[in-house]
Figure: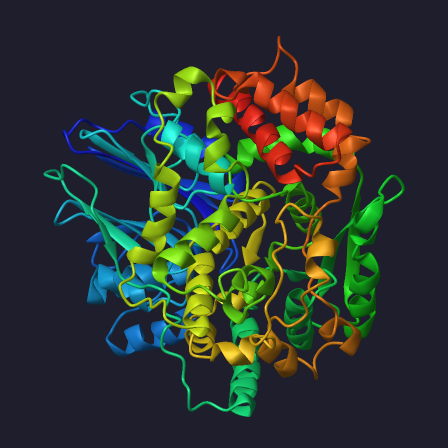
Length: 625
């Protein structure tokens, strides 16, 4: 787990070591253990290292292949690197370190850049071919590790975080209004642009090749999710046994490290499953939970604190357990720092992620995360059943798009944006972006309830899940912590896609009432306990029945109550101050005032939108003001 950056000047202008150092310093938090640079005229690479495998200097980057043709910088972890290393040794390759980095560069030397497609793990890689004078950039198949680039026709500038790209003297700061429209529709970006004008995120499972003659950056996609080919001959018992075997294998693979490994432990099944298996390999493994001060919380949010269930499991697995208790005042302190590190705004309330990663980093360097279990095994039934009865592709799009307008529906955009911004955005574009996620994949069908749910699983794995990974990466790396995701093991994902929908959801025959996404989580989840059926059965012998049988609960602070109570003053101070609020250059002050008033005075729950308005305000202050 590290940070990388680089510059390739296609116009042959030399790259300066001063620029590389500035870019490295901007992302030094990602790799506090050491740093290194590679400079060859018009090509430069910089690397900030968080030493996890072979912590000696032998693992330093940039790293060159033994034939001295390739040099790479790499961020991530490859869980099958030991098997790959044995294969390369059989071909005559020698190794001087015990790192996955060396396996990658020697594998590229032996098989070409297509070798990256064989990696089981999370990665962002930049590879310079000294012989052909070509630069390769690539990301893992699931999009766990970030990689951004900016290309102006003369230079390609890339980095793990955008703040390093901003150090380039030719980059002129500006905002992508199309991305802003997309964000305030979905609370996410489904394209690969960013709020930073001209800065693009390399898509997951994509490789680009750039040489001196390149005029554009062309993405080559080499993998995609496929839920359309379930194994209908598979019995429930077979699915259960294989899920259990692959889950064990995935956690065991991701325990590999030369530094302490811990695990997040909420009160839920996904983190409980991972902790149960991990505790077999590390006696008294360190576990970490985030709880909330509930003294001023009312309504259904009063049940948000998961510490009791987490403590139950910590005692059950005999872990060394640590807890972070958050209160309403933590929002004010953390939000500026959180937005600076996140920079590429995505998904919902994430400051608990920032705090729990900071806690874990004091005890371990690697922490296992449960993200991915819901998306693979059907953990969001209230979403799938919204499109259960769709009768056509168009009907499916209509119903699902209405749901995924999580923040501001298209019909209210004229009130959201300032007139100058409104004149420069295409209000129809978010719908087009949404539909392209599906129409990009020609194998999707729309002729049965099962097909609709398969499409929903595909959509969330392609859009919502990468947003969660991005938040996890940025906020953990802010504290120099590597997060790993055992559910995102290649073999486990491949199998999960083949499990029939009827084994994942136990309530396909019933119509489910629509529920507003803004509705407090406890109220929303209480109606649904039929998700992840196969995973629950596979893990029955691992975790307490109280946890297995518990209804779905999300990880969120009680912000609906706090925005009306203890944090109401901060919300108004940040968003309604005519002299200080910066984001009103883009967002209508009247719209903001209406939303805040409706939430605080009329008890219309706008917690998602208020969070995003505060995030965007701090984004403007950090990067524009």
